[in-house]
Length: 381
Image (cartoon, rainbow, N blue to C red; front, side, top):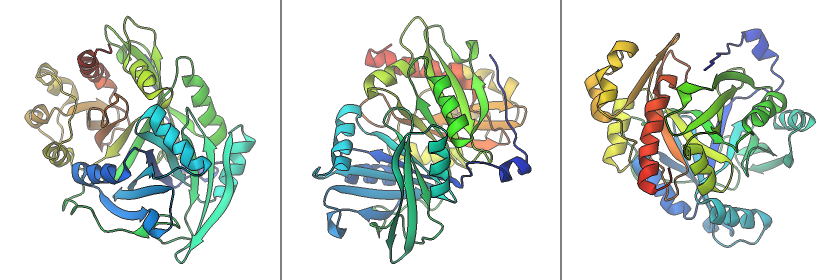
């Protein structure tokens, strides 16, 4: 097991060849965007802020934009496919089920970012182009990443509308909770095929100038039955973090193998959402129908011995099945939902950080055993 942490000095950040401002949006292709928007509004406490559909000129697709703090989700479904884009969306949902098609990244200059990426080996999907309305102009471009996922590069510095031109402001579906359930996207995890992890890590190193933040290989990321390997790439400011997982050879089918089988290839496995009050968030989400992975009581019997004091008492962590981990920089609290659609594919993580920039290494074994219990129920272990 090896683990490395990357700290970038300010001078290196200023010289970043591919500067980013942060995650712009996580875009989902879904079978029914109206119902997805209702689910994430109700169950996740997000707020509908923008809409695009037949009522405002979009004859082919309907899209709902939800936010929570700086986190932005976009849910798009096809009404009637009439272009290559509509057909792509319809085929994506048919093949993969509901899933993430775009990890959009906000950049200060989409033209420069696209040019750098393509010069360094990226496959261009859309060359830089402008879209505009009465709120200003947005410059967009897109490059391909693993599976059928893309990174849209978004320069919205000249725009003050609700999302993008073509979208109109929308009223909340339900009244969001008084206290935000989460504030930001912490990281987005991709699952890739056996032997492809290092290729995609190299892609981010070369194409975006991202650096390797951590890596997890060996016994600490395995159970008796299944294993995986993971490396984390991030931009110089650590605002955009992409762990990349691949399966490892083991006795039985790993969670990555199951994902790849049911998703139909590489794709986004989970999105981690940063909160400053995981207790209130988990209570809210549980009360509104979100199902989380279970953790045995035995996990908590010795937790205090190695995690030490945390903001949340051990008994509360036990009650809510929240995991805790500590490293040299501090500690974190985290919990994972069960898959949020019928296929055992995409799920979410809720994470509260106190100094630690890790990913819960001490919890991997407990987490994977919890996932394996769910796999066994589905007959997929």
